[in-house]
Image (cartoon, rainbow, N blue to C red; front, side, top):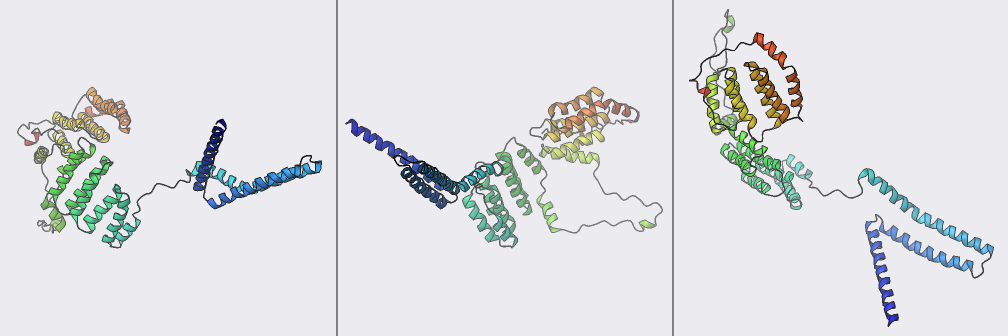
Length: 405
């Protein structure tokens, strides 16, 4: 019984070792660039090693003489030389490959990527349907690729004039998981551009509102709100596309013969009228940064009302998701107006200090620090030249308090 267990254990160990050796051989053959050459080296090595072992054993004999021992040593040297010739190139190649991977990143193939060059070439040739087929083939392998889906939507919208199909492509892209907020916003903005090109500002507005709904509280949503506030009407878009001739009013005859020719100025809105328009616009679009900044400048420059101007700029500064660069610029505008309209040193310095406290990593913070150091000189220069003209404008519509953002 004990003998049977020993035999069984020996057979098990032998099979286990054979299995491990076979797996190692299979892995080496699979990863080898030339499996046939590797297999040939193994077979030749086994034949040379086995034949050389029996040859040396036969040479040595039971009582080998000195000449037989020398012959056996020489035979071993010849066998070693044959092994070197057989395996040295493979060893050198492997060592060189290992060292080369430190510089090349290894021999692993790069991850597969979509290939859109044929589609781009067909599109340049005017073969738009064929280009969509090429894009579809790539999207079948990479269904979530943003570049391919945007290319497909652009061909549908601009080349095939199939805006509903382009909208469906964009909607499908934006409902896929894994896409970033900028990618989603870029897709919807492109769709809005195509709607505007088709003279449909209402559809463009609905598309931009989807950015606000999908990405609430983000910078992309804020930019979408800004764009909505500046959308042109359908009539304005039609006029731009129709290229209507511009009617010019009759000029002054013989103006070149006059001794003192009158100044011909372009009709412009007065500051009061412009302020009224801006107030009305902010009632409809409270997040319009451009309109609010223009209104602040009118309050400061025309009405000399620093308090109202600072109130508008403060709303811009405190609005959420504003870029640091813009906030720093608005704070500097506030400091400019305070300096121009007679604020004291401490007030202006506190405004510039806000730039340093809020954005210490931006270059604007260094500029604000430099300006603080020269602030007293600026104030001293203003004391001699600054003249503030005050007036009463209680009835002007421009001083109407617009809605806050």
